[in-house]
Length: 62
Picture 1 (cartoon, rainbow, N blue to C red):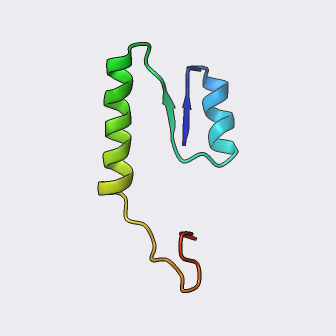
Picture 2 (picture 1 turned 120 degrees about the vertical axis):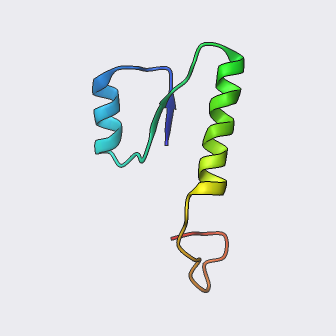
Picture 3 (picture 1 turned 180 degrees about the vertical axis):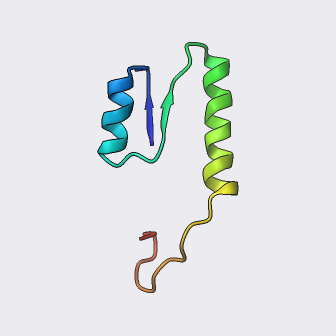
């Protein structure tokens, strides 16, 4: 995941080409940033279904 101040289309394209799975432009206000962080947290910890951990790889989710 890329969290950046850049809103450049070329940066978005490069990030996805390099394997990023999401690109988020940081807002200017602190309140808006906190809201985005909360949304990202809900997405990754409540919405996304991750594969089960392989035996012997505790702490890693490959």
